[in-house]
Structure formats: structure tokens, C-alpha cells
Image 1 (cartoon, rainbow, N blue to C red):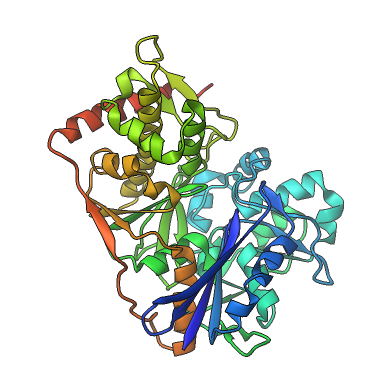
Image 2 (cartoon, rainbow, N blue to C red):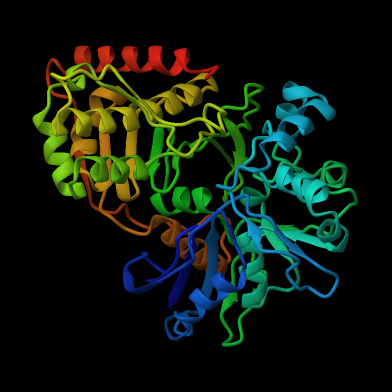
Length: 461
């Protein structure tokens, strides 16, 4: 039996075809999406159509997709406007207003597990209500990207899962239910919302007769694909950076730094997200006129601390901390330290310091890191792998490069196919192990301290 997992991300659609019993990949394909912070959903289905022959080999299929995107549909099921994506920050003023209107940060954290920032769906609804009132009035239903694709594949009506629903701002992980009054307060009227399916449920059938799993958000899909255990913290270095762990209890952080998501299995997934991740490396590579492999070589040739250079990597605004209008800052530049090596080192150290801050926020919510798993495009950097153990303060495991979001969706499809209480136990994928060298910890502590000073000093810029 074969299962297909779909990862519909900001940048592309990836599909993996796996054996249902053990997750071994037998085929895969990808197709690009348009770049930007909004996208018409037809581009996602057009990309998925390129995998049709592969998909039709599957006995079950599921979709994991970028979280938070707002897909507004009219009464006839037509798309009202291009979907606003998670990385669209135009709703930052509306996020602040919603926090104030509906009880403050503590109330939001207790009710929804979140404190609204521009990424979350609820803030995009309010932005549309204020800036595009005709579109808001036409909106009869609101879906997330994975909900829309699951529906297009053949789900019986609009359906979602608890993991992706927990990122909207109008669903309660603690209570396991929608808060429709919040959606109505944001949009101006109560929209139709997709049914929340049970983990592992079959929600429909494709045109070729395959079962459809409920799908989930991309981070929940990656957690399922990696088979996370207690004490594992994942750092995903992709378009965004995320730090997350599986937990048995919901998180409610009134600071808003930790999003108290649910996962795709019935547990919870406290998560910290940064807007700036792998692009910090690509931007630094462009600055020094190098490709990514050379950037790593340059960074590893420099001394810890980059000769006194410190980069604050908020190149495209930032979500954690909530600074949507921030820009990057390179501090400590002198004629003696302005070398390609130091700039490269400062970029890698900055990326890892930002992610280490994210892990600290998880720890404040009760997560106890035992080891760190690095995934995503940025984990392929030799410099990231070498510097991470000391800066993060834990051993680092780097699973072999794979489409873990798509693999998680495939594992969910296998779960729907099996009809069992728990997902199938697929074996761990091969991985490399990395530990800090003797003496690295002290240097890393100094790097993090200097980074923290710059981060805090620029808070009001």
C-alpha cells in the first residue's frame, strides 16, 4: 500500500509517495509557487496538478500546508481575494487593536493559546474588514491553505484539524472548540468555519478512490514526520525559523512569544516562530559575494565572535520579538574587522542566537530540551551545524535532508488508511550527531550576551 503526503508551503508544493508500513520513500516531485505575501489558491492547485500521476498511485493522501493563511470564500465557494499568507505583516495595527478590544494579552493567551500578531488569521480578517469591506461582506467561509486543498482533493465539505485550527486565533486548544464570537468580531459577521476532524480520521475520498486524511499545518506535519519524543526540540530553518516541541498540556503565554498550538495527534505543540531564518544566510552570502557553501567556509575560518561584529538579523521585520517594522543591524564594524570571514560568521551566529532565544521562550513554558533537531534548508550549512551545539547548549541531531512536512502528511495518510488509535510507528531516519568542542561554551556565552545587548538596545528603534 502507498500513501502520499503533500507539503504546500510558501514557496512550493512537494509531494512524497511512501510505503504505508514503514514510510520508505518510493517517489517524489515538487513544483514552485509564486513568491510574495499573498497568493491566489489556484496557484497551489495548479502546482498540485503537476503531481497528479504520482498522487493517483496512492491509496491514501493528506495535506500539510503553511499555517495562518486566510482563504476567503463567497457563498458559491469562489475565492474572494488572493489569500493573505503568514508572512504578510500588513495587519500589525489590527493585531494590536484586537488585543486591546478583546480583553488584553492574558485573556487571549488563556482563551486561544495565542496573543495576536500580524501572522495569525484573525488579524487578517480584521484587516480585510477595515481595508476591503466589500470583500469582507462577500466572505461566507474562511479556510486555511490546507483546508482548501483538502476540500479540492475531495473532502466531504470544509474540514480542518486541531493543529492548523489552533493557529487561527479563533479556536481554543484548551477547550478543543472554535470561538466564533472572535471570528465575528474580527470580520464583522460570523463566517462559516471548517469542521475540525479527529486525528487520523478519513474525511473523504479522491476522484481515484484514495482515502483523504484531515491534513494539518506545516509545523504539525513536520513533528509527525520526525516522530518527536519528550525532550526533543525542533529548530526548522526555512523561510521562517521555528522552534517547537510536543507537550501534554496546552501553553498560554501572555507575552505572545510562545504560540500554544495543538499538534496533529491529540497533544500540543508550543511553538516560537521567527520571520528571518534561512534568508539571513542567503542575504549574507550575497553581501560577501559567495554561495552558501563558501559562506560556511568563510564563517568557520573566522574566530568566535566575528572580531566584534554582531548582526541583528531582523531583515524583513520580525515576529519574535514582535517588531514588524524592524530592519537588520550590523554593529561593531571597524576597518580591522570588516572582512568577508567576519561578516559570514556574524550572520551564522546571529541566526543561531535568534533561534536560541526562541528555545529559551519554550523553556519558560515548561519545555525541557534534551537534544535539538535541526531541519530545513539552513540545517544543510556546515557552519550552522558546527556552531549550533555551543550556542544552543545541547547536543544537535541533524536528520538526513528530507521533506519532513510532506512525510508527516504521508504518515497521517497511512494513519487514516490503517484506522488505528495512534499513527503508524515509522523508523527514525538516518541522522548525524554534533556536540560542542571543549572550550566552545564560554565563547558561545559571550556571543549570546553581546547579541542580547544589541537586541535589547534596538527594541525602541
